[in-house]
Length: 338
Image (cartoon, rainbow, N blue to C red; front, side):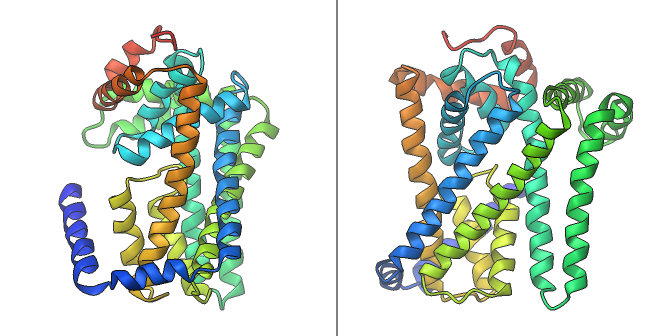
């Protein structure tokens, strides 16, 4: 069903490009963009990308330094930009290219990072609801209170995970097509990942960084739209929040999938003409893609890997994403020397 929806949206986007959008209008929108605002937007987005690496370093419990975290992060996101492979599978496999850690040592942090990906989604959802109710101050306070309650709940869970892990296991096992062995594996690593964060202050710091990451992408997108001459209002903020809800910073997508999400949403909210909307999607994806490709290639060169390693890596990634049992067995002793 999901594939069918993606195909339908893809056909819609292609038809939009061919029959509706004037390509010369897109080029003109890019050429007429405010360079200063584009630079500010670029810097804000790059700041968010750096913060993702800092969070990754904190989630790893200081077992690796920032440079190693940045390199492994860059390789992961570079591959994700071009291959539709689940990010956790990329995370636990590419770590062997940039650090001496075995896959099993990084799996807890990769699973816990999914939790903060959900937090980012909720932040964007609350931002969307707040923008839609911008005339109601009471509504904004309600969404802010819900966000604070979420953070407090995660703090509380990190200190009581051992007490409630059996209940979580029983609840999740009731879902259709849930493999109990895989579920046990994920929950154990999730528990270990939360425990590895240690003190409350570190978990609080990770939460605050998550908020700043979400804000940096929202602000960066606003600046880029502003550079294209779009008037910024509550409808624009709501549209961008919805885009980031579907494609949060933790879950970059391939170029066609990104445009399938961005273009229809912006057009539905009527924030700009079709040419400006497509120009925005090209700029956003182009900035992120160039940043991750440069950083990823630098990371591969820095870790002294060959072209063979890069070609062989997708095979390991696909195996890890298809079969979690393979990942469990593989985590017992894989290192960067392979």
